[in-house]
Length: 310
Image (cartoon, rainbow, N blue to C red; front, side, top):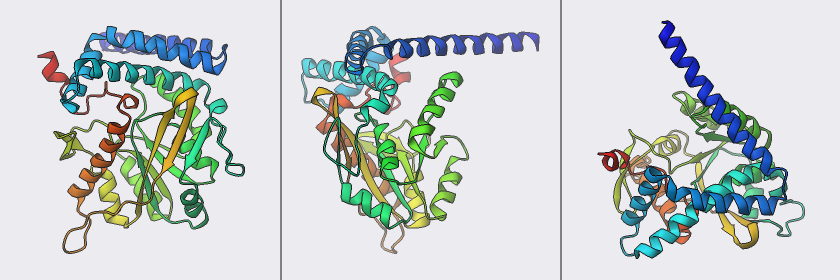
């Protein structure tokens, strides 16, 4: 017991130390102008990423599998752009209040431009249960901020960081700017179901690693996909809207809310859960193919890390 408590104490101290180091770095970034700090962070992770051998090997393997037609130079360029995007995303957390300058009452594009404003207004003025899904593209954290700016009350499912100290900080930061948040855990699906049952709205990321999901295809390769969204649609027959964030030149963004997708159904009219899961993958794949450097390729989406380590 004593040894177990000692090990747990050392683990907590290590996590606390890492968290304090991360907070220090982000605090230092805050001392500088947003544009320069974000560019510095992007250059730093562009340099650092290839030195993280396991993660960079996974990134390059994912890219080679996804784009067999591309040259090694093209693959390397996408990988470096993806590492830069990770650095930008981290620094943009610090300056999120400054970055998000969109005003629905005066929609003249600044750093943020929004596509799909009529849809935002329609969902706000005619409340009903619906689901918005997105992926790890651009700065996806801006989407719930945009929803809140339009007065939409969307409950967002998110996966907290593994480090509990960082997770608490991130949760508090997000909660102030993004409305209702539901950390991903065993009971989160029931929370989302209750929200839809009450006539509310939920937002989910659909490109995350999931070990026990439905077997689908993503970039032509087998991948398991979380059936949660499809099952919620089957239960509540709600509309489903794709949304994404796109990085533009000069530190700008375009946030897009697309029209509701048509949900695949079986001959008896029930939602086809497998086909719906595949439809989500196809939509995300189309986004990633358009802007491949804006997706987080270091994720083990295809569960290949173990084979790389063998």
